[in-house]
Length: 120
Picture 1: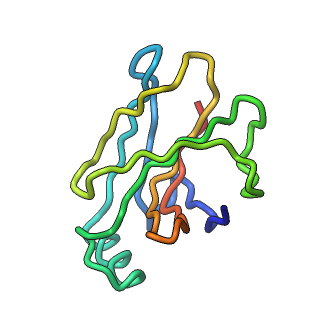
Picture 2 (picture 1 turned 90 degrees about the vertical axis):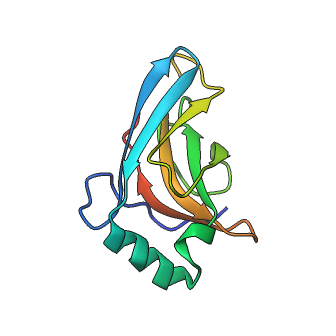
Picture 3 (picture 1 turned 180 degrees about the vertical axis):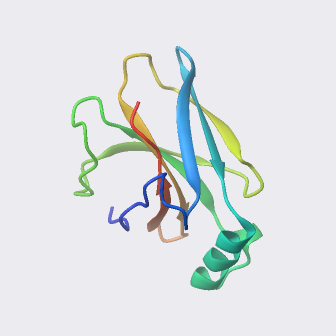
């Protein structure tokens, strides 16, 4: 599945997202979006912010160590509430290498990354 290049979690114009192990089988993702960025996203997609289908895309990088966007990346999408600023991702195991994209997944399946976390 094709994606847009993700913004680094250190970019000032996009949301900042960070992940950390919560326990041996879950990761806690936290992010911040400014009101200005929310308005920018709303304009870009021409859809009210509250109606955009936000997801956290958890990439399993254990074997590959990088996201290639070549259709063979392993990932799981978690639908999230637009009002959230943190989410617990279950189904991971200690020792797994991963990172998370905060993004929008449209009805046709196309995914738009807004920000990428660090790898853990």
